[in-house]
Length: 231
Image (cartoon, rainbow, N blue to C red; front, side):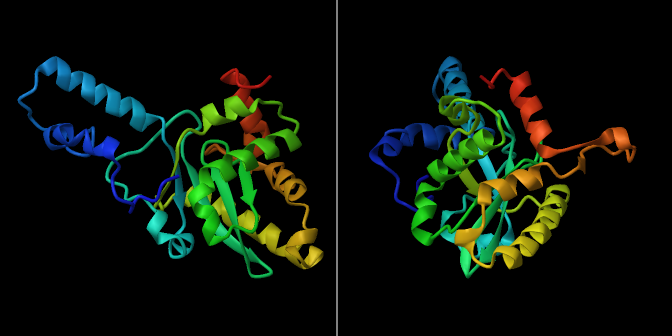
């Protein structure tokens, strides 16, 4: 993942004329002297690229620590295919760990001991952790399909998703208990603990009946089955 504050590359410079004509946001297309067909093809291309981004909305607490890596949100970024994720931070032995949660399924992934130097490579780290957790949870999926599910990962400011934040706060309480049980991050079986929280009963509907309860692992498995991602 490239630092959004870095200078633009030559490839970007070659699009300078298009940037002047259409603006930086494909959803706000300005009038141009180009032909209508060219305008439409350029906009569709931008929208296609834009739609394949994977958005991780980070908590304000996490944003304070990695501010230069956060991409300003200028428009709706609902994306494909798993939708957006939310990330927050917790500490074990003063080491920074990320709890990342998929809003659709409430499936959790933990990234332990994330250092400042890791942020530039957070795309690969997150994909690998997601893939490893799925394997641990007995969900057989190829790494290629994981890469398709999680396209270019971008970090965005909080979207104030209260529902996902509530689920995360509950899981953070579980993790606080386990921190005292295991004493040290090196002794914490991260994949096993994540498996446990992904099996915790949750209700993703507005109904409070028992039939409305499920768990994040089941929901993720159902999504992958439906989308023919599972081997």
